Length: 87
Image 1 (spheres, helix red, strand yellow):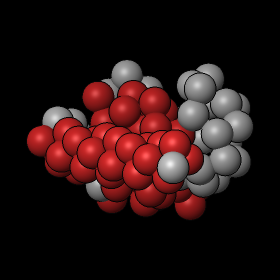
Image 2 (cartoon, rainbow, N blue to C red):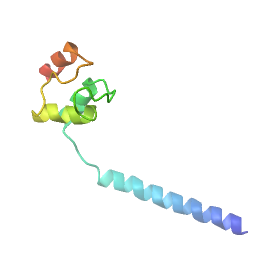
Image 3 (tube, helix red, strand yellow):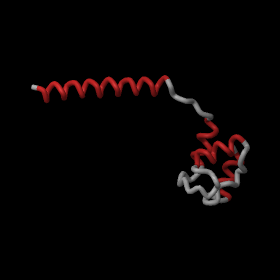
Image 4 (cartoon, rainbow, N blue to C red):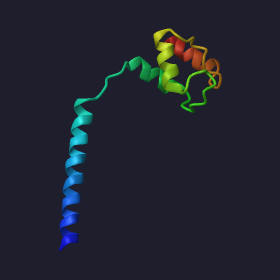
């Protein structure tokens, strides 16, 4: 009897919290610059840190803002530089 009621309560609690997280994700979504998304998609995504940034996302943000050159990613080489120059 107690086990059954505990299962019901935990299931309802999980559903309520999941629903509230889904609603919060929809209404509290942070919009970002689509150009940053495009630059990040061109990068390798290996998060190697050879460019001096902790990952590809911060490196892409620096390129878009003009704080870093388009030649910052050593693993990608000239192919990435050409693609970033087109953007």
